[in-house]
Length: 118
Image (cartoon, rainbow, N blue to C red; front, side, top):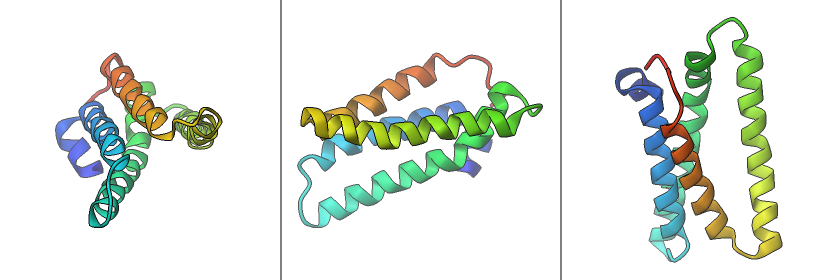
């Protein structure tokens, strides 16, 4: 994903990953047998891809001057989401709906991000 983001632009690679995460989360809800493993692998690939692209994306958005702090806040946001969304899903009993909604909202947010260099 980092290589592709260098070629196609980080914004659109991140958007694509979030769209696949949204669709994959929807498929995961009903996947069984081999398909459960296949969809889980796809979700894992997309989460890892996002983690690999995020530092460059944040640096493109905010510049190099404070890239460590900026990426630290982005990583903190991902961590809060990784802990918070499962807790919320468990509390309201809608784990797949929360995952689908989070990915969809993330994709919408990425569309509105202005001025990444790629």
